[in-house]
Length: 367
Image (tube, rainbow, N blue to C red; front, top):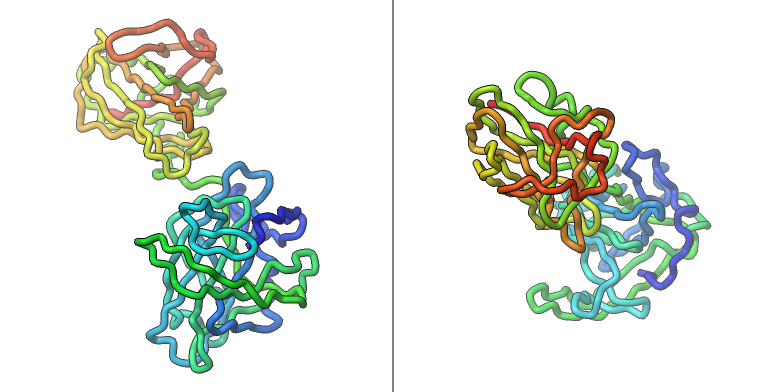
């Protein structure tokens, strides 16, 4: 994997038309294969570079065009994504650098069609480094195995596909370093028909639209569109609501996004329901991983909390240096009930959002 050579791959890759605004399929050609290749005891290897314009790139799916032969009923293959490694996470070394496993997924070779077709291997999302490799171990023999299709010649992306062999399998428990030898790179500009499906974000844990949380049973003061985002290490936005009697709160919704090291973060914020004297009625954890690096609605579930008359919803983001929960605000109209404070007290307006125009994007649902 040539991590030391940072070529301008953006102009070299064939980019499929994205299925969504934030998805790109990396490949070097997706026309019907001109021929097939079989590395036998070697693995199918292909190098990729993530899109330059993206801050973060994630991947949860690889596709490859292959055909099977012989009896594969009891044979498993392995899909591995490799990236550059620090010394303590080194899987193996070659003359071109140190490499570690980003993710691994086993698949059945018997699922590969004998007459050829696309195979899709899904896995838990992984965040990709700028340069990475997709490697498929088929452990093929003369009698059984798979062959992967080859693209038409692509001279602009020369030397990105080839064969690879590792002398011994890594012992995961011992983190044993092994040596390897990368060989047999194509000199005819063909490439394996192996694709990496990438995106610059992940879908939120729960897909919630403004329409889903509007209408009967919901109370809110925002218009559903964020005009800005704020965060805080201490204290946070509050919204004053009036239940008009006694009501039961079962969910609160917050519009936000993560900034910084958002991927697979385990950080937590805190969400409060306070009474008219700012005393705690209920306190719940708001998990950062309810959000991603693009704006979305996140939900906090309450166990049927009863509120009477005036009450407050308080969100304390508890922002960290490495990752921040940014909370949205609407500034298109007059501030109706938005405040700043903490449990027990309303504080001064300690934020850059315009006080007279801000309505925090916090919504309540009554059961």
